[in-house]
Amino acid sequence: NKGHYEHYMQKEIHEQPESLTTTMRGRLIRRGSSKSKSVLLGGLKDHLKTIRRSRRIVFIGCGTSYNAALTARPILEELSGIPVTMEIASDLLDREGPIYREDTAVFVSQSGETADTLLALQYALDNGALCVGITNTVGSAIARNTHCGVHINAGAEIGVASTKAYTSQIVVMAMLALAIGGDTISNQARREAIVDGLHELPNKVREVLELDQEMKDLANLLIAEQSLLVFGRGYNYATALEGALKVKEVALMHSEGILAGEMKHGPLALVDENLPIVVIATRDVCFSKQQSVIQQLHARRGRLIVMCSEGDAASVCPSESCRVIEVPQVQDCLQPVINIVPLQLLAYHLTVLRGFNVDQPRNLAKSVTTQ
Ligand code: UD1
Ligand code: M6R
Image (cartoon, rainbow, N blue to C red; front, side):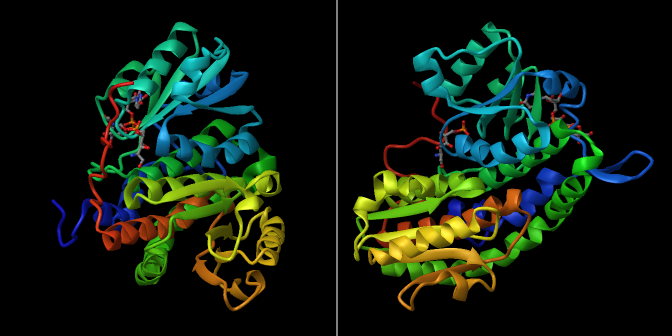
């Protein structure tokens, strides 16, 4: 049921304040005599000790689910001190990459039925790793065959393009980082700030959804373009990949997410006055590096669209020709939840304006159950 929306993708983008609330329900708690703010993931509590002892955490997924895991890598490494590596399921299988008994392998899949992810799960089970699932589908193959896991509880997602499942996956993985990280005095303030950030996230998403008309206007400007680049780094490297995936998947426009730190190692050659480029430059530890990327793109007359934190337009924009998308600021590790929303809206409006099928893009299936 699409309610008053025209498309499922549109409905699912706009219901993210509610889906995020459901994802967090009952999972943000106060713990111990100090009543410090913490998280409770019922499906993991008996396995946390084993996970904390593992030598490595390996995230495994495909498409949007891989991107969601990538957003969580920095915060999981920071809070747990355990090395985190990333695997696209098909690539792990192609290489028969090493997986050990001392590894915790985390399988991320909205549907819980993706063939490559399932085969990678079987491979990790055969190699003796502890296998954890993060899925939206109770009773799915991944939920059934992992040792333990977390349901993201985002509600059914119908549009082929994953939107609300992506933001709920990010939130679950931030909670996973808090759960695995454990309570140490040294990171207590950081942990509590993240829990506070989680509490206020649905309202911040509600705010960023107000950019709907602005993103429609931007889509109108980009309607006839051949290509769109998206530059990000740090917490928002994954946002660049995911924004570009949305644009190519539904709007059928070539788009590429680029790690900004790689700019001079190739992509800079593409920059001219015609190619539109989104640069994600919200406030975090990478901000000044992104300011310098913007300057360098501007020096090559790049056609810039900068996403920045509210109030930063003047400090990020090198000239009046640069367009700005101002978004509310939240905790750095949760900022990808906010930053993807304007890009989801942009992909949605571009698709409708270009006259393509939003909910069922050509050649794609919601769940990729064959290799
Ligand atoms: C569970 C109940 C929820 C209830 C809550 C009350 C289910 C599905 N969930 O939620 O309805 O409100 O207790 O405390 O009955 N699992 C996997 N692999 C996965 C995902 C999950 O093995 O990929 C396992 C978990 O380890 C757990 C079970 O499935 O044993 C349920 O997981 P989850 O729904 O996340 O647990 P709770 O949030 O505790
Ligand atoms: O169900 P899964 O999360 O395992 O699906 C993985 C990908 O097929 C999926 O995310 C795909 O990339 C989406 N269509 C992206 O919007």
